[in-house]
Length: 117
Image 1 (tube, helix red, strand yellow):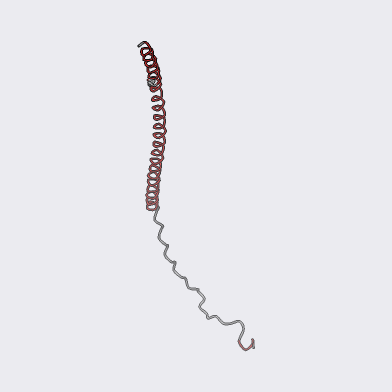
Image 2 (tube, one colour):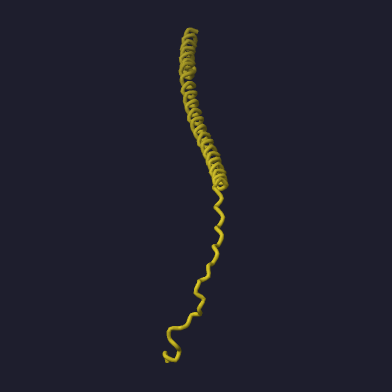
């Protein structure tokens, strides 16, 4: 019987040692979970920053397009106003009266046709 008790105590001791070795370390598990949470939070922050940057770029592109459109419309409306505010050109002057020459004698050639031949 004494042998059985010692064998039983040895087996019980080995079982206790093994059970202690296989127990999960709560603090280590908490550290691993904290590391996982930190990495996840870091990735989420990176994603948010990238997403916000893309949103900001899209908003700036839309704002630039709206501003360009407003500038073009403004320039066109100013051009129309400038065209209408120019003064009207003055009317053409009347033609002067043609004065006839005082000398009414007919014009004759200097050379006669007979002399040229």
